[in-house]
Length: 256
Image (cartoon, rainbow, N blue to C red):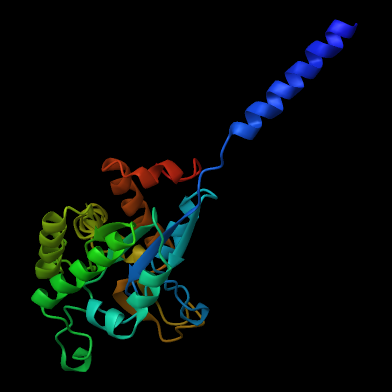
């Protein structure tokens, strides 16, 4: 009897001793910087959704996703408004920073002149974010600007960010930074779906279909909830393909 009690006590001690040796994985932050196609949108704009919103739900409890993307921002205005400075000051070693700009940098129309950023300056701004991130021992990841929904008369999905996507690749190669080509992958998805079905990803609403947009809306740039999730899944799939260490923290409930 005494031997059984001793044996049981020993097993209990071994169990709790082993448990004490299990060190919880350190929490990290994934920072998202970019424009309206990434950001958390205000409720009064629903169902407009940036892909960063569903992206945050794909990770386990060791990851905090902080979405600092903001609608209407280019690399230039994101920096000049002090938004990048905030991220730079708060990031820590081991964090990830996903950087996706381009929609507003390339806007040459007169009404958008305050956000327009020529390609050489765009590349310099991306380089600044990379070097700042690495100075904080965090990990930068570049993301090409997600495709707009545009098709030609033959039903071919058109490339809508030619210069700026190419610039991301050049900067990524120069600084040896992982590049997630969301431009190419999203355009491939649009091509697979075709012109009409692709509208289900974007803010295409008939009049009186949604109380926030009584007159309807035809917007091939901004996503609805479903479209944002599909874009987030494309980012996750490419992270897995490139075997970024961050994928080890994706919850098992996440889409393949």
